[in-house]
Amino acid sequence: MPRLVFVEHDGTVLEVDAREGESVMRAAQAAGVAGILGECGGCMSCLTCHCYVAPADMDKMPPPQAMERELLSAIVDVRENSRLSCQIVATADLEGARFDLPEWQG
Amino acid sequence: MATQAKRAPYAPQLRAENYTSREFARAENEHLWGKVWLVAGRVEELKNVGDFLTFNVATESIVVALGKDGLVAYHNVCPHRGRRLADGCGRASQFRCKYHGWTFNLDGKNVLVQDRDDWEGALDDERIDLWPVRVDTWGGFIWISMDMEGESLTEYLETIPEYLDPFELEEMRFRWKVELHLPVNWKVALEAFMEGYHVAATHPQLIKVAGNDYTQSFAQGKHANFGYWKDVQPLGTSSPRLAGNVYADAREGVIEFFRQIEEDLNAIQTDRDFEAAKKIMDVLPPDADAMTAMVTAIELGRQAAADDGTSYPEKLTFEAMAKAGSDWHIFPNCVTLPYFDGALWYRARPDSRDPENPDKCVFEIWSLKRYGPGKEPQVETRVITDPVNESVGLILDQDIANMAQVQAGMKSSRFQYARPNPVQEVEVINFHRTLERYVLGQARG
Ligand code: FES
Ligand code: FES
Ligand SMILES: [Fe+2]
Image 1: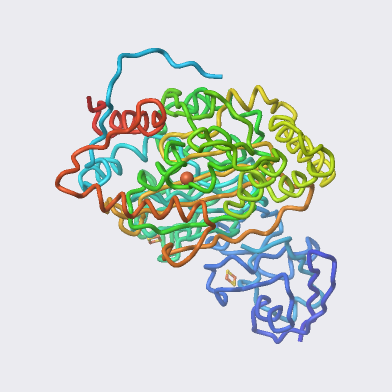
Image 2: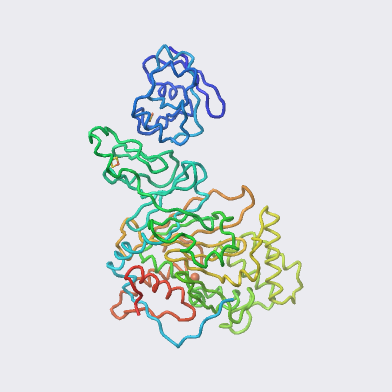
């Protein structure tokens, strides 16, 4: 049960115990993280699960695949450390990883 | 004040088929809408990066969004297999097609083709980005043009900014919005607001207090205006068509004018103006003349605007207002009646759900007003599909009641052409001459 840290755009911090094997998007949704919408359920068609991974935690997870990278490039407030949280699987390695949420999803 | 070049007497004619024929509607769809600048919305509708709205006209649909560097506009169609990309309005940081997921960034560039390798590189030479549309702003409105080689918006508007800039339409915000679905040609709806010649017969209650209702009208290139420039009488006095003045006390006439506009139209002049006008009973003696009563009411309105955190436009002098006149047709499909404190704006289009049907249109009425900072209301569009049973206020109900009767009447076998008034209905005449140049390649006789 890795503990994930979500920081809403307004600064609210939520610590969430994720089940190993589920996506970070689902863990956030289940815990009521407001800044993650995940409208498409994780099939990379809504882009409403955008998050920024804390740079120090980037190496705790595999990098994005080509399709995710291309989609991220279309997001207006994309940054170096942007990810679609539905494409990150919660593993034990993610313990303590921090996800900052953007001002808006879409 | 405008002057009219003297010309030999003539009786202009407008062919009925411009309003009733399917061929003409089809020709408009082919030759008009893609060649002109059109109002797609208001600038304040797109506040944040990613906010978008769609604008449908005839067979076309345009999506306008606020990108990082300003407004962007595209044909609202996916190059893959043609699905419309965006629907209504909202906020999205990219356009992603709901059919197969092709994705475009706000610059219109295709950033994702699902399973692109299936094309083995052949897509690289294919057009897969969104088709751009030109976008610009004037008067707080978002304007688009599908003609990538055509004139700029400034060129297109011709003299309009010179006359209407002083009204600062960009400082106004929506007071209310109505969208009517009407069984009439889009031009029939718009033309109900393109002359003042109908006021005495259609709005008899108004001419008791609206001054001299006689109008003159002028072509302004593609556009046109009308105003009250001949034998001007102050608001609050009765039309010379009536015998004598209805109100012996000029103050009461002025207040009655503002009351009618507020209660029966709810636009142009504002609620604030009406409240302010009532005070002339206190500040003026009962024998005040009509001009003093009107000007005092306006100055009280100006004060009321200031007290409410806004103002009347600084450059809008009485001279500037007289120069502009009362009503402008902005070719092809908008009309505005601007005032110090507010404005009416009309927009008409064929109904996109049945774009070749000459008997159907979508007609919008926007009441705009100057608000103090943060005081503008959240306004939802009221959609009306049954105008016979749903009122939009006495004055507009009276105008709308003519429309279906006109559309039906023009289909009579005896009605070949309309006979517009050469002095007071020049907006309508000029509209058809300009339209025919676009649609038929030349104006009819
Ligand atoms: S949940 Fe829709 S893209 Fe991630
Ligand atoms: S039609 Fe848009 S992706 Fe297929
Ligand atoms: Fe009218």
